[in-house]
Length: 330
Image (spheres, helix red, strand yellow):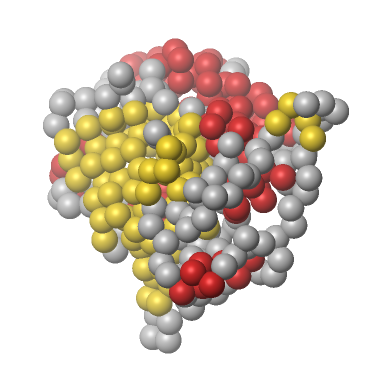
């Protein structure tokens, strides 16, 4: 069995102002094993991006632990170590940002963008930097002759490849992909997803892949966590999630996936109403205001995130009695 490289324990992030407190991430726990891809999926505003940024410590979590097993064999709590230790560990953890149009500095050439992490973390000669940058550019499908150009000269897909190259240039072990393909055309999405899978196999990478697109999640993920209003409501293998979901919210998300296959039968399950205000979440199960299976218990009793089947965790009072349908072939 591959070793666990990342453990998230009871992580929460609260954004506070004078008038209101918003719990963007609410006691989320899961594990990521070396070499696998864990997908995090949910509607906009569910806390996916905040979770990813807390993990890489781009923002500080309010509570909880992020335990990372480093290459040196030591386990670090990324929320507690000092800046000196964090700089050492950060070489192994990188992030690919959502928007390739705003995450690249328009005043820097492609070479400068990709080489910046190297200059910040290592003392390399100019020749060594040039060789590493050209090597990474080729790996992600960029022509080395493009390295002197500026970001405005590239399409969205090419810009995202630049962002991927910047994340890979340090040869990290863990990469958080925050909506890495959502801003791209469908055909370009497929190219970038296949590129990420090829690089994972070649460089033995581990991915935390954040997306709202379940079709992309199914294609790239080994395990999937479903988030709703800051909480993790279901977590299992990708195959099990798409075949036999245990949470009504997951079933509703799956029913909305467009599938170009006449042998697959899916009945659309429209969710009623809007996502509740995260500053004033409902009592009991957060999803009860939009759930067609809601009973009185769901409205009053807080639900626990527990293992209902081996490796299949869910937060639903009625998980044992509901027979939900995933994406099935006739």
